[in-house]
Image (cartoon, rainbow, N blue to C red; front, side, top):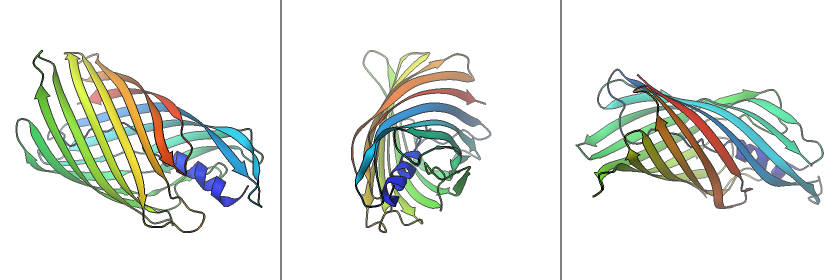
Length: 265
C-alpha cells in the first residue's frame, strides 16, 4: 500500500471525540469528568505501490477518551482529554491491529464575559503526540497540534417551560506534522425535556486550509451527533448517543455509537 492510504487511517484515528463541556466555566473548586467509550466503523479502500486499487476493507475503531476539567476560579478552567484507541482493519493486504494513545489534549479556558444567560470564552489547546504498539493502521499522532478557540454559549427557556442551551465554537488548529491546518466549527443544541433528561443535537465540522505536504492529510469532514443524557444522582449522569459522518472530502465516512458516564464534584 502506498503512503496516502496509511495516512487516511491516521486521519480517522485523529478525529475528535464528541463530548465536551462547552463555553461555560467550571465552578471554582469543582470538576467534571466525562468518560466516553465509542465504537466507530467505516469502509476504506487500499492501493498498491503503483497506485492501483488493492481492494476494499472495513476500519474499526474503539476509543476510550476521558474528558476532565477543573474550575480554578470563576473564570479559569483547566482540563485534558487523553484519547486511547484500539483500531483494526480487515479486507486489505498488509494491515493489522494497533493499540495505543492517539494524543493528549491539554487546554485552558477563560470566560471573557458571563451573565445569567450568556457566556463568551476563549480557549487554548495543545495536543502532544501519542504512542502506539504499531503503525499499520497508523494510530498515534506523530507530532503536536495547537489550537485557539472562541466559544459562545446561551441559555434559554421555551414557552412550555423546557430549559435549553446553545453552544457555538470556532477554532483554528495548527498542525506540525505536514498536515494542512484546520478550521473547526462546532455547534450544540441541548434541551432539558424533564429535570432528569437532556437531549442534545451536535454538529462537528473540520475544514482544511492551506496546503499539506505531499502524501499528508488534507481533508474536510462534517459530522452530526444525537444523544440523550439521563441524570441518575446529583453527581452521576449516563449518556447514550450515535454520530454520523454526513459529508466530507478526501476521507472515508462512517458511523459510531457512544456511551459515557458524567461525574460532577
